[in-house]
Length: 284
Image 1: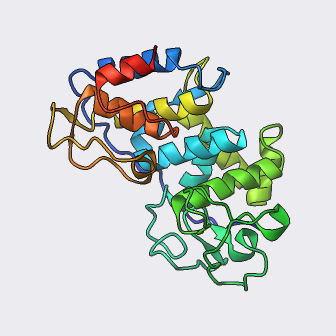
Image 2: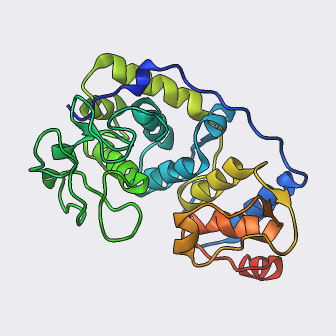
């Protein structure tokens, strides 16, 4: 057994979607245009954008992490997000093993994706939190994965835990057989059904062409529409390095077009520059 799920027994929380800011459509349109001209992005394939349910229910940082991990391991982001919902309500469930950090539930599961210690890192004693250390090189050693690009794997770091979950699904049959992969994550028929049902809720419109890096960029953009008011210049947070922007949310509540686009592309590891003119030049 991989997990000891508790969140599936709780009613799904619903959060109101914030009002869309003036010019939000222009911001996302700018991003789509830039994506269309950047030859460095992967070739398009079919996928589903996040549904309104997903955007309202999944914290923006978690949505981006699900997309990034899914792209890395070649699986459906919605299935990964559905597991995150059922396990710890995207890190928000107040229960042992989910919160506070460092706890273990009565099944021995720990962290936002509810890994057993020995599943994360082989040799971890039962009912204990696995140690922070290098990512495992083989799945026989466990699924400890570095999703934060900091050289270590921490079951309590959402980026690492979500990447580890994606790795586990891929190793156990995804994307060819999601039922088998989900059953390997938690061997219960009700669990498989619940994950697949929630994944269906999270999938939005069919979006040909949004895959790989483009999917990550668009996921961040969609998740952040309506979260800022327009302001040109300070105190808008223009971000630092790509790694800086991947590790945190923008400070404050204001943005302009170039800032919004820069933060979105940073989630895919791309720095398109600080100003609209440089971003347009980068687009060719």
